[in-house]
Image (cartoon, rainbow, N blue to C red):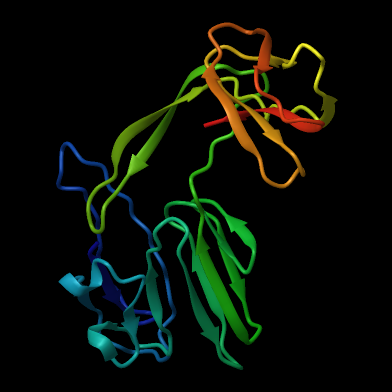
Length: 251
């Protein structure tokens, strides 16, 4: 990121142009106009270049009226910060009494005090207090009834580098909810074994479990269903008296 500032008087004259010198990489241009605090100033230019320690910083002062923290200077009582947050990260900004704040979102998705912003959106306030900026997470929701592969196009950019097109392929499969028979008290038959039937889905692993008190469960058998069917589970050595059984899907 390079920042070029043109400092012009309110009624001065200056020519200006912007261009992208690369023939293979695109660029984005954001113009912000701030009125100077006095007339009759001589037009001039200045630039701000990030230092190595700025690349990983979430909030960096890039423009100020006094050049503090190696920021570029303008003839106005204004501070401009560059905020770059990784997914799931957040930062805050204090708005003092008598001041205001303007947030312009360039890339990504974020929230400001819980309000969602998308690229190109802006938010402003004159109310004093704390602004909380939080970067969104990349989430995916499969369309209703969709199974199979879904390709999601993305733009990935590093600190200071150009955005690179990429894609993520998500495979949507039928994931059954935890298949759990309601714990049922079964009395051991005279034949000396207990059998339980449950519906299973092909490719899912299931566990057949037994408990005496509904708190501690012992796995009697674990297997991956070869086909979707009503599977039969057998306890060859049930305890004397009564026991509770369940069948559940496991990772």
